[in-house]
Length: 180
Image (tube, rainbow, N blue to C red):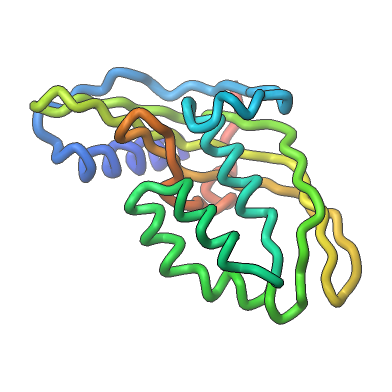
């Protein structure tokens, strides 16, 4: 699985940087960030971006999905925006059908599972990280009140000084992974 995550990062960075003159600077690491991360650190690290994306993603409200869509696009790279545009309707179908309103999100851990950085021939740096976010979301819908776990890996990238969302990864992709 580590090889798979590493390849996802390298391929993505290669596509973004054009592969010319790219040199890996950072090796995969595991870091756990406590839940008390201040919001002033927004998007300045892979952890802060992943935390912000998962909180925004979980806080959906059937009454105004446009606010949710706008927030998700704001937190995303161009590739992330394409991901959301391709998946908005599918993701919102259940929310709208059951009149779901999120009440709260609590993030327990944010763990960087792997990170790569590259510099292209024009000396532009790009970085990408696979991050696992765990926590809980409480929501209500026409079927009652729910308290569900969050266990979501995602890919985030730093292309212009801010870390942003690229894509969700399947939690199954992490089977067999042991944190260091």
